[in-house]
Length: 300
Image 1 (spheres, rainbow, N blue to C red):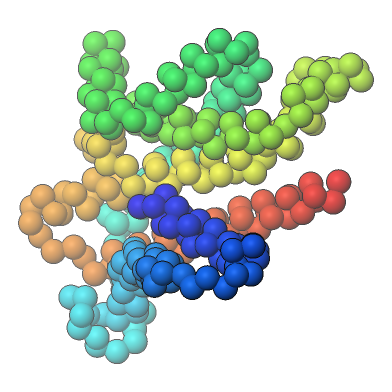
Image 2 (cartoon, rainbow, N blue to C red):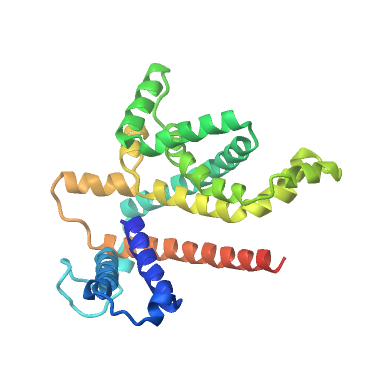
């Protein structure tokens, strides 16, 4: 959906550029058919409607996290009661902290392994690079249930008990391909001879990697880390198949309540608001850093 919106915006911008750049046909003042005036308006309207449809539920959720009404739609006045109740519910807090620990650990491990993998693939031969590019796309397109079942069968066959490590392995397997995909474009923007130049100037391979390559691809690394944390936060299928039964996360906690056809606790509105604001803050920080880094690159 996001790609479709971007494509429509691109069409509208192209039409604006065509209108701004005069041509010989423009000088003749030939009247345009009405359809060509309508298409940009329809595209813009569609984009705004889609944006509203995506973000309106989130805004409603945030709004009703500041009232103590049991049902969304009933406004009982401004209140922070749900936030106070949230920090007094041990089960929800346990699920929240477990989720954060898994997500952050997954982000660190996946980013480290994905960065090394992306660099290794980039500096491999053309044939090896092409092979790994195809292999790396398979986990992204592969249904998550297939990955979950495969890992479960593997752990059972090896006699490994389900615990935090098996859960972490499942989340790392899920997120590593996305980290590689985030870093690869930054590597392609590099001068292909910059690493060899650092070695020729006396730097050891590890130092050249740390001082030359990593700083240049850092925006991609941060984007990959943020993406892996986000994917891990709301994952349910792999979590349900690879975790210990006594270990709860937010996704399994919410599913457990809905499976019993019970009403979701109102305090979850406050919790999801906090998670959304934290994610939004991380996204803003990464974007600000990327813009500053792009400006420095342009000044060079």
